[in-house]
Image (cartoon, rainbow, N blue to C red; front, top):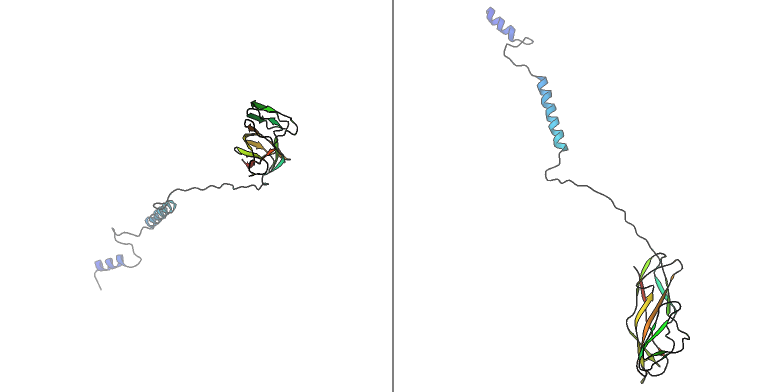
Amino acid sequence: MGTPSALRKRTIEGPGRPRPAGAHEPRKRDSWFHLAAGLAVLALLAGAPALGQQSSAGAQAVVSAQIVNAIAVSRTTDLSFGAAVAGTGGRVVLSPSAQPTRIAFGGTTLGSSAGVLAATFSVTGQPGASFNIALPGPITITSGASGTPGGSSMTVTDFRSSPSGTGTLAADGTTLYVGATLNVGADQPLGQYAGTFAVTVAYD
């Protein structure tokens, strides 16, 4: 049997007994604090953008299209300068209108006005749409069959239209008037002269 001091030491250090002064107990409060701090750091890291990741945004736009009728043009009447007297040569100018006027210049004078007409074309397509008008450059008209030996010719230049340059399509189509200038040579041979020209229209 030990001494009282030895018994006292074993009794103090035995299971279920208080630890000697200076001994440290586990601090659960500190463990919870460390756990909470770690979770907060993880949350911050999860919410932060990854290294090198760029800010981005998106938007949407509408795509639309419309299918319309094709534009078309057809001849209604041909262009006719009527009759002219050549004289020493000159020009006859015909205006682009429903009731065209003729003006003679130089040594050429006007003959009968019977059958004088500006050319007319009907333009159809999408109502309300605008269109461009392309007129020809100078053309040649000839007397007799084309290529006939001894046949004579004149040039027609300065084609003009009404509307000019651009037009707008009406619900029932738009009428296009075309006039031009006839260039008559001095002592131009008598005869009936004819030729053709073309106009082109396109949506603006």
